[in-house]
Image 1: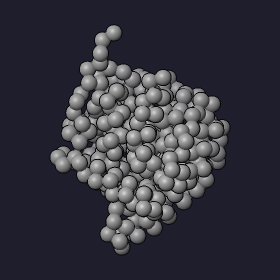
Image 2 (image 1 turned 180 degrees about the horizontal axis):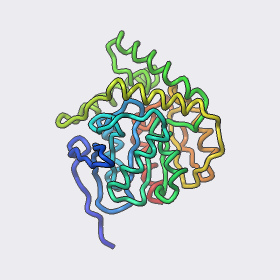
Image 3 (image 1 turned 90 degrees about the horizontal axis):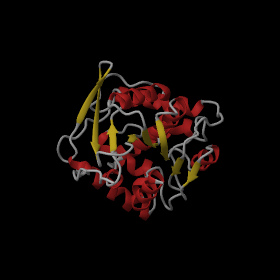
Length: 284
């Protein structure tokens, strides 16, 4: 059996690439082995390429081809950002197919997890396995409160001169604060060719899409692929009860024990536990 060739370039040095889809340019980064089912990373509210924790990306890319991208209208990608999760899902499918793939795995974090669920249900032949982190089903408990919570914590962050993710992604404990500082330091490791921050209009469109997702009537899951579900035990943005509920709804759902003293950014805080578990799930 031939050994797949592996790119040794870490995420902080991975070059920016782009592909054009129906007149819209999508920015992305690809790293890891040349062979194998690629793992597509679907990002959280307001996030661009530089918001993925390099420990998570590099850990996954040690054994899997990994592709991170900016959705339409976000960061370095062109076009205008849709205000529904379903439209974001359609864009993601077009992007995946433009790269020439007809079989992928998905890792969706928060809003990216909403998008991943729609893709898995609508395109069952495209998606082999899913990892859903810090996310929940349509109409899940408290998801329609994300907008008000986010704005409140952004104001708090401005007043205290801190990054909003410290409040939104981590617990307000000594351990949570330490984890937040370590994570924010890791996000600064890339110093060249950094992505553009999200625009205010795109941020508003994403908030509207999340609010709509949270207001939908809960429905039976149409996802029949194997799914690994993970989160911190104290997620304020997408309350952790949604993680347990989501795993129970999925015919092939596996619940990773909720990470202790961790919130919405649980997979970043506990990357040393999450990455081996994710690789084991994907390779099984």
